[in-house]
Length: 190
Image (cartoon, rainbow, N blue to C red; front, side, top):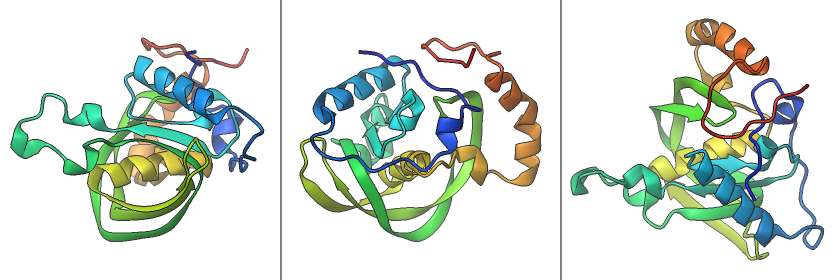
């Protein structure tokens, strides 16, 4: 099932998401639906708040970022990088902060350079209830940090410098009012 994406301006995107009680919902099915939704919108990550669910769940699949790349440009952190994160907690972020132009399915048409640490250590459960603690690096770490921000009520635009924030203010207002053209389903408030 493909869910509509919730746009910038919806209050659910600014809430700290609630922990999931295992057994309260079918996390395998929900994760599959979230992957399907993410692929339909050509994304590499999707958090539950982006489909209107205020729960601590996000899915990632960075493999498409390597498609079409020359061998020397393949990011090894993205090989087999398809995962589900339930009730995740970032334990540590280390390494040099580096900039990369990020975007977001909830904020279509806007991109901006965000600086994030190179490594992330994260504790989480899989959709099947397996407890994990892993360290990710490079683009895999960045995708996780971006999606983790979503379950903390933070958007990538919050990380932009003041000048860039001013430059996109009107575009953000347009998104909030539904004045945006995308090739995937979005759900705007009535």
